[in-house]
Amino acid sequence: MKLNRTDRRLLNELQHDASRKQSELAETVGMSRTSCWRRIREFEEVGLIERQV
Image 1 (spheres, rainbow, N blue to C red):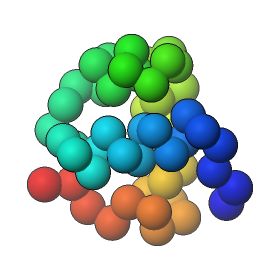
Image 2: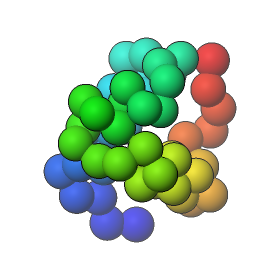
Image 3: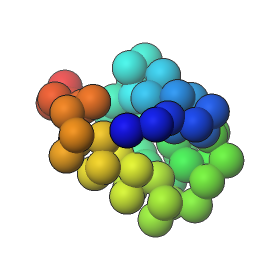
Image 4: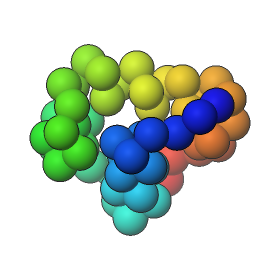
């Protein structure tokens, strides 16, 4: 999976605080809430995200 700048920012934000609401994450990285949700699911499917604590 090729990651763009927004993907890397999203992963970075998740590493710092995975408990944040997706709407907050989306706003922080500059994407819609739906796009954010989809990207997180894709990250999980390919193994970039193993679990959220």
